[in-house]
Image (cartoon, rainbow, N blue to C red; front, side, top):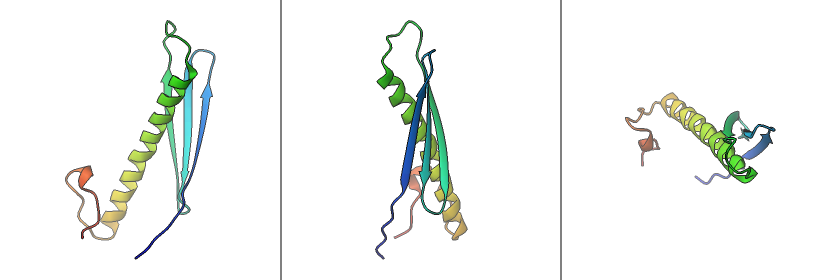
Length: 95
């Protein structure tokens, strides 16, 4: 069974004057929307390198969305009668 889909991701980054970067990520699958957030805080003694804050905040927002997406998939797997795996890495469809 062939299947193709396209999901849209929007990532917004905001940095304030105190060195805090906030990330807001929205994943739209067509059927649902998942929102993730992440933050990074620069120590006042550290050099001001905005890319580092962006990377950390974005990575944390993506990690947040990934965890939500895996939980949704596990609920869907249970909803079709499949057993819940004992470890998250085992989640998948039987062959």
